[in-house]
Image (cartoon, rainbow, N blue to C red; front, side):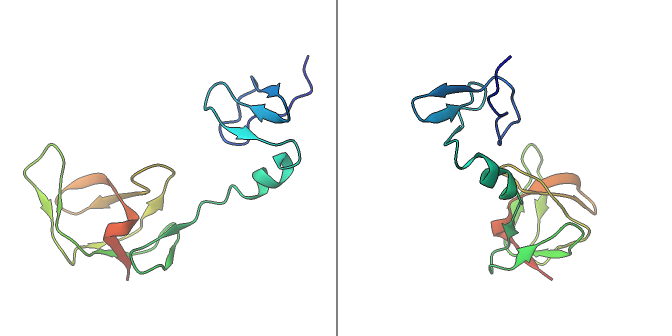
Length: 114
């Protein structure tokens, strides 16, 4: 059994050592052995809106640009208030439910904290 730590990004147990770095073959994340404990402490998700305000789960945001809904002819209009957002990791970092449209993901750059 190997004494190598799990990947701090995807938590894979298949890490290996290459030179002075640990490498994860599943997500291609590379980190140094000295940074391994510090990386786990920095895993806090920080999402900011278009104005630079930090968003949190449960916040209410306002859409600042007309957004076309992919796969539909619907449009989310400027000024639409979205209540009780949930922050997620990824390209569209806000999960929410919009009245009249339903569940969708938004990018934080197109919203402003209300």
